[in-house]
Image (cartoon, rainbow, N blue to C red):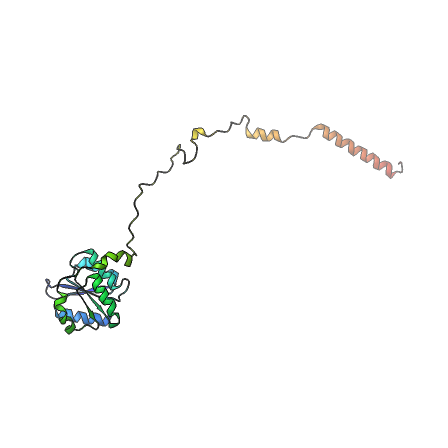
Length: 226
């Protein structure tokens, strides 16, 4: 989420505050209102990079422990974009060593320990507005943050056109090379009729004689002729 609090002076400098802690946001907002800054606030590290590119602020105040993308990597992304990225880190005492390393890596102008006060900021103000250091951490950005930084694959050209009618498929013989089946010389219905043969008259005669002989034998047996 990002929101803005503007002064009445349109020419006033802009500070992008990247912080997810509500109390820290309130403190920093009050301090920079006193300094007549236009104030933009973002709670998400990844979104903050987009906001930085959109706004091109004079100062970025960024916390190390923010969602989606930590402050160190977000600051490196801002520096990689180019421009006069004047960045100041804010961090709790427990992250003092990490904050000092991040300041050197990202070329930040300073880092301040939370909770931030007007007095602490005034003590560092000349340093904050001083020269912007180099960012040696940019050389290791691909190793620090490989996600979403994958280069697109090289285009191998258009896909091959699908086979059209009359064109051989890959690995298949041409249509003229395919051996066609010989044409049928007789209609299929005639072939079926010919394959079903009717029983011959001789079979009926033999069957009739067998029945007569069997009947005569039975008659002779039943009348004690045999």
